[in-house]
Image (cartoon, rainbow, N blue to C red; front, side):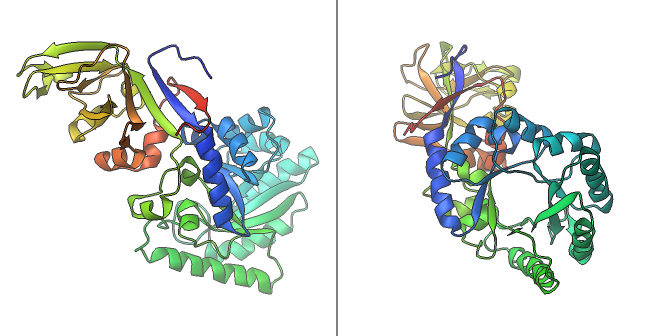
Length: 377
């Protein structure tokens, strides 16, 4: 177990990730599962999660940046790695040296990547990303066949896959997913007619897999689900078997009994309605606890009970109203996770803050030590 030099730490349950990946591999059916470990594994630790996911049946990995892929290669991870957006030209030699799979969609980028591969005397594997409606990145459907033909005409590139990304798969009532799928299917149909279909044709993200929308995909790019978090509140029902892997802990660093009417934290914005034990925890917004969490009903688990955060969260510390609980310095608190019969989930915190669970776990900063455990629950 990693050492913890402060009274605040994250526990990452690698057993939960292993269980989640195994279940998602089964749900993916014939499709390969490629685990998305960008953003330091959504805050969980990219290298540790990658190794665990691969041991549980994942066939490949997805990242957002060339440097994220390079980190995995430096850790001696040899599985296929797809970088899911175009990268700056200065990264091309590193990418080709790392033998990663590049995503391309712009004509100029394709030519530049091919030129870099030719200089190095290698063949670069690429996947073409097609914009079927999300309008973030990707080649428009109308130009996609031309980009396929361009890639195939370049001897230093190998078109290994084509794919798209759903904008609203986490919203089951939204009709755009079916429309995107149809646009992509039409494109793939044209590839088939022209005998241009590559090895991989893929569409599905976590929400699509959980909703079993992956019938026509050769691989699934699964991110948030492997960490045990539903992609949205609307998909909680199909994600109920997943086990959250991250929990955020602290130990009480100070306790004081304050009288009714006393204020707490900067601005003294909240006055106590009645006398109470106030516990200080050594975690703040520099650690990823949003400063305004106190104002939207944020809570902490102490002694198995929900205790409200009182007063503005400061950079390094926050205060909790423990009421009449006999709390002591060194007592354990949970900001994310379970204690006793109570659970605070990433999506619960996200709902209070009008955001998504992804942001909560990704936001826990690097200065909070990650401690890796197996089968915490």
